[in-house]
Amino acid sequence: MAPPGISSSSEENPNFLHSKNIVVLDGGFATQLSCHVSQPIDGDVLWSARFLASDPEAVIDTHIDFLRAGADLIITNTYQASIGLFVKHLNLTEEEAYALIKKSVELAHTAVERYLQEFPDAKKPLIVGSVGPYGASLHDGSEYTGAYARSTPVETMKAWHVPRIDALIEGGVDLLAIETIPCRAEAEMLVNLLKDKYPQTKAWLAFSVAQDGKSTAFGEPFQETARACYDLNPDQLVAVGVNCTAPRLIESLVDGINVGRSTPIPIVVYPNSGESYNVEMGFTKTDCAPLSSYVAKWLDMGVKGIGGCCRTGAEDIKAIKREVEKWRIQNNVSEV
Image (cartoon, rainbow, N blue to C red):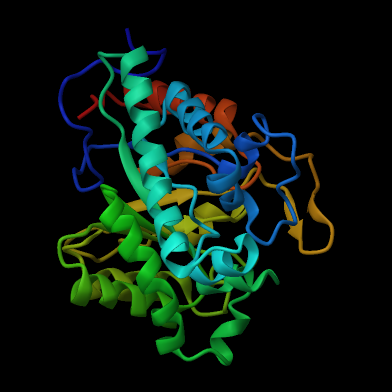
């Protein structure tokens, strides 16, 4: 039998492109991983990616936690992964670093296999390759500001991204999550890179944003930027949206984004728990509404994919899944 909230089906998992479909993403990988490891994760220059090498079973178990909670897909543990960081901080060769990024996909496949052995009637989950921003490699919080865009040539960012994307695709992901991108320049480069180098690969694009609820983290108009990026490559982008921000900001960011469009952009959102992040102090402020309390409103606005980012775990995804199912029933929307 499938776990509660997951429909049993032999069909392939639906995609974002269907107008009636809703997809439940997974949550914050490092948050859930902390249930399986004793070593601190926050503050590590490699963040959760270190455990690809040091504790692969914990990585697999974390993926399975999210699948049991009702996620329709799992995202590889590669947000912080790059050839250069693995060479520097794990003392690997470039070839070994490349292989470790590929291994992240292998671990995700193993998680799916074990999950389907446990729940043979469940839909086969998708495996999504996490492609975090160039700024994540700088370990200075600049993925939340985009400050590096002022001094880093786009070609430098591109050269950094290509081998990690190569490894994820070679490893066998179903699609990519280009996520926490703070600036239009990096986003457009990646969208064009998909078209030029990876024409058979689908992806979604999620931005990190400013606290004003209307701008990218770098200060560009969010909706204008999102529309422009989607229109560069609508055949390969399955969704555009926001991640790693406060849930209270989502409505102002995405409301009205499809007004006047003949073809709506599928929207994906996976915010943090609502706590604030400071590079020195970490996450603070714990008095925030549950992420699941926002789900119905987002679905009413036409959002197609919902999950969690930092400080969200399997229990949060389970709650999101319940709210999605409740909304489907109330709105007479069947699962596609």
